[in-house]
Length: 307
Figure 1 (cartoon, rainbow, N blue to C red):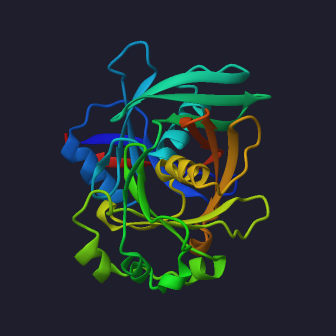
Figure 2 (figure 1 turned 90 degrees about the vertical axis):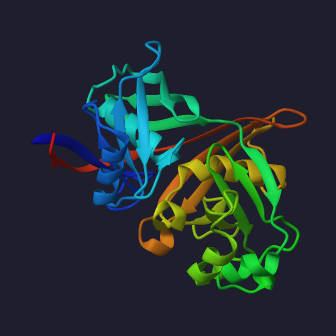
């Protein structure tokens, strides 16, 4: 019998039982793909991370990221939370101020910045692949029905469109915060019209009306294909969300072609999350996207498996 140790974190929050839950197996033990998927299914969190040695010695660690149903090539809150844990446990050396790391994921190398102030890890920021805009979903009535809304509840001048930084999400712009709170995800509509297309499997609804004055966008994400009914914080979708907001003129720059955006998510689930999104542009296009935020360790455990 082999004992596997893991830590449990809440990510994109400073309050226990807020944010998005994450389990991290940090001991770099060799595990097969099937075993890692079984463990993720057993824990049944939105994501579980297995830390592995990097394939390139110049990098710091390799992350394998699993939902209960599949492995992901990249994900935001697992990257942020795992980097926080590695720093907190001293598994990667950290100095005062900003620390630049490179973590390997399925999409390639992910630059990460870990900030320590007065001996405390205060934030982690990851750079994501520049988001790619995919197809526009033309059946807006069907998109509204998926959320149990009317077509009039959608923002009529904004596209329903897929955007991806490694995992594609279908972004559905909703007119009001009131409509966002009324969303009831319809599995029957999803299974019949959205589930078989990679560009429409994962659904991200948002509104620029927010509950908190410091936020710029109110978000909800639904991913039945991942085994996630609703996600309280979706870092992998937040970079693409920032790109969508910038491209469609929904946010104002904080500086010269530089945007700072706060997405609030998980409020309907009782797990408030606040994701920091940073977007850099030049005269013609988006050139860089980063996301970040705090994490806290809320527990630890052991899992027993047969060798």
